Length: 336
Image (cartoon, rainbow, N blue to C red; front, side, top):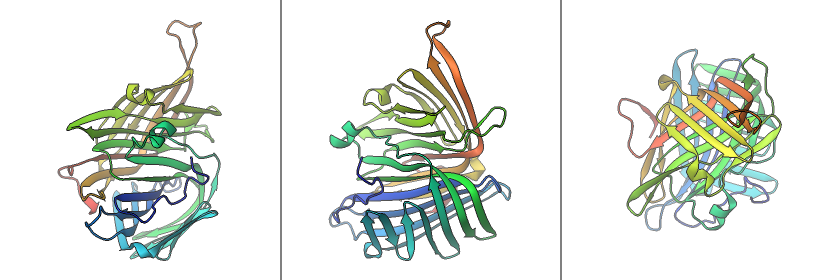
């Protein structure tokens, strides 16, 4: 991992896209938030590089979802690696927070980061350049303070939980599911601070075929890191996903993690991603999904060889995304 995992990777060349995003859920109101700082440099001769700010919100109480995006020439983007700072127009992102706004949305957030960065993409795959998209999670466990404003709502956040991630590459996968959660509790409702789950499951095109799913999972449960990211591990993980759900079972070391994610179709925000080669992917995101995680540890003294170590739930506080190469019929795209 780079000295600062948030450091901008774009070298000014063509055929590159890069994304920074915050995903968060406010317990007090149930609102989900998804804020993105992005850039796309099309392939040579296909256009000029651009940068964009995105703001998405899901409000289950009111049954409303919202998506906004505003774009500028890439000259409006600037960044320094250390201490990390990235600007798009007047919007700022640092390792301590983010602030900005456009049209009828705005945000001014500070955060405390409780855990070190996580790296779902195995270093071997990165060095071999086999991954067309690289994902790192500089801040997997954030505690947020500040304010967010969008039509009909002004949120004052105090202790909301979320994560901040950074990804870059030359092309999105053909379809995928992604989940992040760091606001778990026990079945009895006791908070489980310091726990998080981060995973993605992707199908990729290769030689005219679709290969996958490849499914790296990282997290922290019961005060112990979990990783299932090895080149062979990611092909063997059991993963089944669709528009509103994901079931996954991953093994790492002496532990096995089984997770189920469910999202409300009516709370999905649909957005369009643009690849540097001009192709498009259609993403449906929920920051108010529900997640259940069961953590098992190998125990050869019991009949099945596994002992349930911990069971965690996050009702309405998990972050889920599904994407494919065709728009889903009858679902609106808030950002095109």
